[in-house]
Amino acid sequence: VQLQASGGGLVQAGGSLRLSCAASGRISSINAMGWYRQSPGKQRELVAEFVTGGTTNYKDSVKGRFIISRDNTKNTVYLQMNSLKPEDTAVYYCNGKISTILTYVVQTYWGQGTLVTVSS
Image 1 (cartoon, one colour):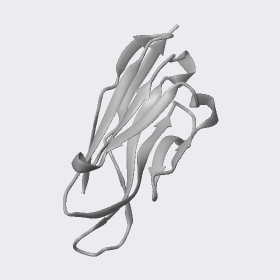
Image 2 (cartoon, rainbow, N blue to C red; image 1 turned 180 degrees about the vertical axis):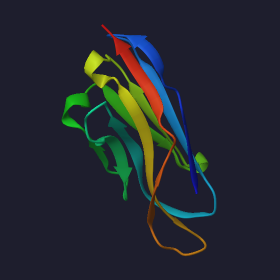
Image 3 (cartoon, rainbow, N blue to C red; image 1 turned 60 degrees about the vertical axis):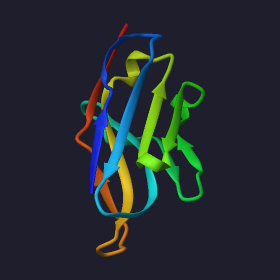
Image 4 (cartoon, rainbow, N blue to C red; image 1 turned 30 degrees about the vertical axis):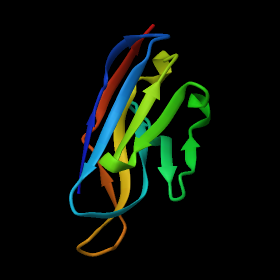
């Protein structure tokens, strides 16, 4: 399984960016898929994710500003980030908890990370 992320970049505070993450491979099922982020000197943290049943989880500080959506036909999730703040600056990692048709065991996969920089 591979997770291909895209969409990071540099934006001014108050601006918007959209991240995309596509999962590919011999996928049997996707139990969860979403985005984490990591700033220098900090631990990686959950930003937003879909879990089984379609429930979404958001980090409190992004609620009302970020929206996670998905296209199940493409095994792709999107993160629309609005009203960006300098504290949103981080490397954003796509994460998936996915089983394959080879083992049917759920494993965690990570994308390559995409840098989001918000200038003040």
